[in-house]
Image (cartoon, rainbow, N blue to C red; front, side, top):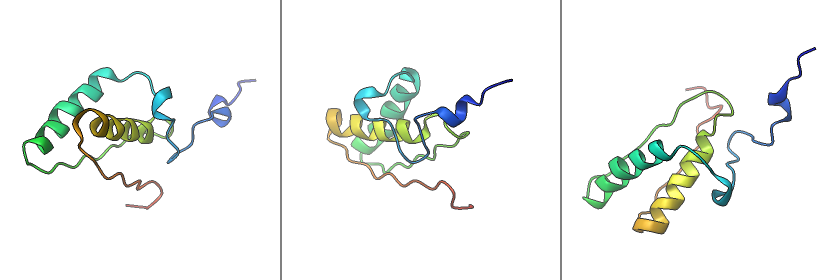
Length: 87
């Protein structure tokens, strides 16, 4: 019998992991910081739409990137979760 590991996951949509526990995705974070935060610093507003399957860390990625931009560049973003909105 195959166990359903997804049901035992401590991660839930819209409940990102604390920033101090976020790991991985260095290349993606670097790109978001360079392309997104860099543009904002240059005076150009930016928006990102993060899409993917359930439980892959979209909310955690958004929260971490927002935290990093505020910490390192004093750029403050707005995060809006759209999960379950039936777009």
